[in-house]
Picture 1 (tube, rainbow, N blue to C red):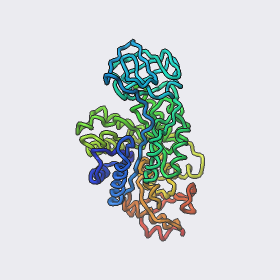
Picture 2 (picture 1 turned 180 degrees about the vertical axis):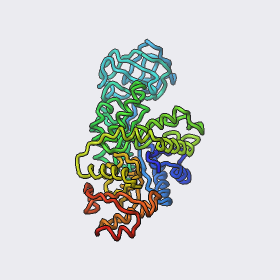
Picture 3 (picture 1 turned 60 degrees about the horizontal axis):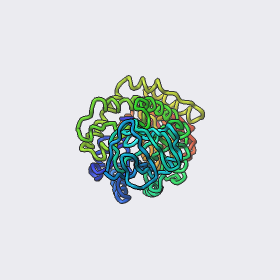
Picture 4 (picture 1 turned 135 degrees about the horizontal axis):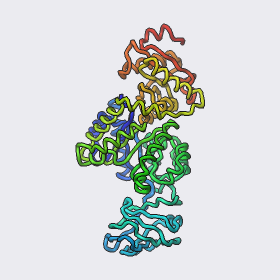
Length: 478
């Protein structure tokens, strides 16, 4: 009955069939495969185990492959590390000689091409902050604005400029082709700066998986509307976003992006450090619980666990905690008030009108569930965009559609055979509503569909139907 979805990352703590099954039964709807870690052979084993769980439990499960993206790192130091003090000068250049207290190699000429005086470079997740005083095609002389220990291969963030870098490195291209051929349902694209990055990935993917853009750079926030239009879904990746932007800027950005995704009818995941302390503790902090709850109150489609389920000591407890928080929030009357007050949807076509009517009828006539017949999942996404008070059942004959919809708010997917008659569809919907425990034979359901069947974009029917099959057969037209 929970509406918000839970994404759990798999890793050393959760790489067996038994653990994956336990996590799914505890509440995980989507499993994330981190392409930054593990070989293709490791990923294949995880994919196979997830699909076996899906088969054994007869429950569609979405698999999200998260591409690494280009990694910007400094070179190595003669002493392994150095201590930088506030106010000192420090040089970044292309010289591959070991680093010293005064300089180090930054083997990314594209960074120097984009830098200007006054730009900032952040090292080691923002712990060290450098301001560019002078720069050229192969160097940047900087002032240390925030000091600390700088050591071998630490990551570098460049928040102030759009870098002339593609979101897909050579490794990402190989991983994308591998994951798409393997049969994942979603591909998460890292380092997105502009909509062209998404379009490149979509072309390479060629329809084999849906594209989800990770928003983790200031340039992506600035170009968000165009990126959202080019994407099938969004992840608010608050880790790097909180490094490249002031931390106080992240919460309002999160709220704004969630609302835009809702209005567009595209799923949005809130990610990073949601239950971070549960990596080592069986109990979360109160602040972490509030963080998860806030994302749910804002109407996000999914909340995500990273290291908590991938490498933590308590992966099952982390999923269980997230599930319990979600259930508690959704049972709060304030949750319904907040969700309905933030509903702001532009209705531009027949399908928009039908799904809006389906929600209004369901909520005003004590309807138990909305059943949507879909081939592409578009109509179901529109129904979910309305955030109805009643559950949504997506009825589809396409396994891939059912899996992808496992990421969408409030949707429970049920496989059905290909249909030719509308009465048959209504009967199948009634059976699914009863089997899933949403309605009894004395209740009514709302059914939406498109005739002719199995043609995307043809939603044109709304029917209020009884769950009693005898009444359907005696009252419904062929």
